[in-house]
Image (cartoon, rainbow, N blue to C red; front, top):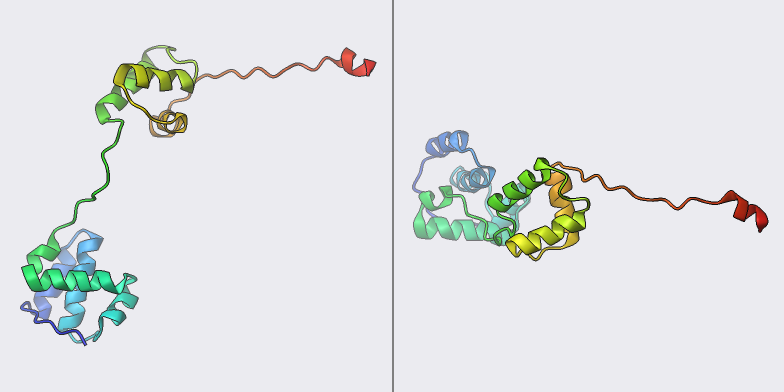
Length: 155
């Protein structure tokens, strides 16, 4: 049994559920609504319905207890690291790719990023950036060794 005092009415929570744009925030309000309307009794039952871990639900309820509904309405910012290739560097690379046939290989682009911008990233990251994110193709000609049929016939 969840022991929490919810100040808002069910109608207020229903209106809020319809207005909220972000799924993460809607799920938090849904938890408060289910508890207020006595549809769900335990944190475990809520976690099963939402597909979230029970500690996540408990954390949301603790935030509500301490700071109220406004704290649940804020969308948390991701704490991931910043990109090594900033939009400005990405833009300069795209311009360099479009201006002329500067790069004949992804390795040349990789070395250019290292020399011009001091960025240490893998060759694979450069390839994925150019090919999939910037949607550019480098004209790489692969030479296939020719098979000499006369030499094969001698054997």
